Length: 502
Image (tube, rainbow, N blue to C red; front, top):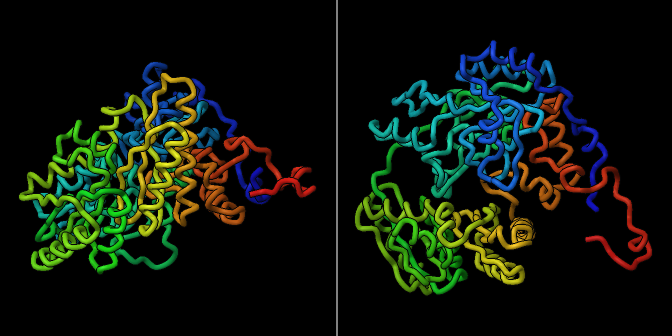
């Protein structure tokens, strides 16, 4: 039985009461462009889940606004009728954050895909949320600029989703997450008001509401314009792939690189299963049969990069690296990264089904945690492929299973949850960038106490007192977690000293 704070429970909304009626659809149709509503059952199924396909809910209506004004008008109607709404970008999220509400609507932002302005002198751009992550870099590449965050799905995931999840990607070790590259947001509140959070400079006076909204997983409102910070292309880039006899040696190499004062642009790790899948999909030139490989990339001033690149190779050899492959040119470097970024999709080459998880651990515990994950997988009779951002300890274990085998999907789901909660036991977090969403709400109780959750609920209630904005996500509830609400009541055996509560 989990301890739930009574104050926290009282802050949670009782549930929305509005229904999507024909009259409501007509009201919505009047405030958006023609052809912006989807209500046919077959078409609605397209929006019933995001990248976490295990959870599916068909919405009552989908609206595709094209401007901030249209988004605000739709949200105002939802607030008036108390109808829940869920914002959706490209649908590539992996935690069920864009899972619809059965009696609610989905506000899809896919039509809002314009780059509104580019300020080369001040290295920033204003974009709509439907612009793809990679599309920003493509648009400003002619000015020798780029957008640093680079999640593996960057050719399809959109900046609005990146803001919602505070996405990072392979190069977040040196360059940080989305929050480090967003200056301002145009934000529609759950009441339908349009406000600006942040500004042209990185440091604004007063509370940083921009940072509060970033990573809030669409639970506080809808972002409709984003002012992003752009960076100059580095003078030099050097990339290598180092093979190791096991994950422990690879993990030790990562720790030693950072301890040496070197901050690579990226340090990625792949285990044997991940290497097998990536090679089948992308022919990136990874060594088959290798227990663990590191992709290390340095960038910056040429002289400094050359010197540090030699030190990285020395550290890898000192940690028993069996082979080091150095990218000879940009084409080979692109091939290496094509393999790494194809990892999630490539799992279909070695397993019919899989769960993608996301957790964070201290770098110093990489080797021991991976060993524990392998032991847990063996005990469950399943395989786990690991491919992740080793530089900042952001694990992405992929639990492989076959849904056609009775009970295997359930075992895989339980193992995936256990791995995330193992990350907390190791001093880490239940998520690094994929978010909590619907998938990990109950695991929030492993990381936060009742007082912490109460503060989060207060913030959410301040933004959304009706509870209509992406309800049922992030915060655990007795309904989601299958438990009775109210204060903790000890079991009679516990009171008698026969059992104890963990």
